Structures are given as C-alpha cells and as structure tokens.
Length: 170
Image 1 (tube, one colour):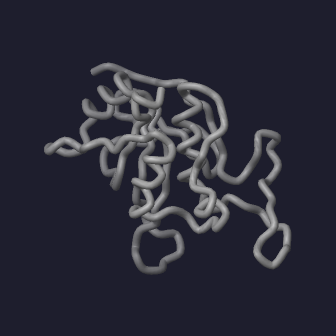
Image 2 (cartoon, helix red, strand yellow):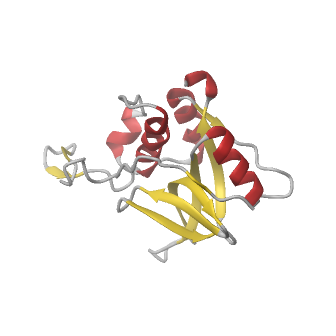
Image 3 (cartoon, one colour):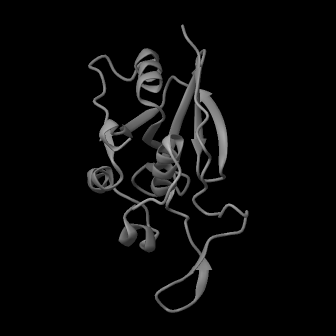
C-alpha cells in the first residue's frame, strides 16, 4: 500500500487571497458576500493551478448566480475547463483506483453527497472537494468552504462524479 500526497494549491470559495470576503453587487444593487455555493469553481481552479497558474474560464452565469452547480452542468464545466470524467471501476471506488489516478493524472475534482444540514428534502447536500492524497486509510482533500486541507476515512464516502484535468489541456 503506497501513500500519495500531492501539493495542490488551496483556493477558497468565499474569500480572496487577502482573506477578505468576496463581495459583489446583487441584482438589486446591494453589495453582499459572494461565493457561498461556488465550491465547484474553486475546485476547478485548484485542479488547474496544480499544473499551472492562470485565469480560469469557468461558467460566469452559474458563478454569478451563486446557487451552486447541478450534475447536468458538470459536462459543461468539463468542456470549458478541460476536465475529463473518470469512469469508476466496476468494483466501486477503491483505494487502489484513487491512488493510481492521483499518481497518473493528478488531483481529482470530486462531487460528493453529505447528510443534509438543513433537514430539508432531499436528505443529501452536494459539495465539491479536491482529492489530493491517500495516507494509509485516510483520504486527503482540499475543501474550498473554509478553505482548509483535511483528512477523512476513505470508507463510506458517497461520490457522485469524479473529474481530472484532460491531458490535452496541459
């Protein structure tokens, strides 16, 4: 069992590099914090910045709305940002699969489901993180919410979709 840990730049979804809240005008002209639901964009930035710095294209209309991204928009983001969907193996998302992917392809943009904190239906909230490593039975990740690096036990995580940077875009 090999341990892998990639040095992926940390990008927050709500704060700029100066630590200040991202602020923008809403449709009524009021200045308010922005980025509560832009984990998807921060994670796309982390994947790209791992390979090289530079501005991102993103999905401006989705980013401005700040209501998150849905699974139907993942392929649109992938085409725009040069991401490639990972096909999960028939035997499920194994430690070996994650390890081999991190070594061969770099960090992984991962959509996952978490128990809903609002108590509303559906019982799951979606979130995007970047998988950055495996150390024994612990999965290393960058979470753009705080932003922070973290570790969690590998077993029991529910991933919806996984993307890596498309080699043709490197």
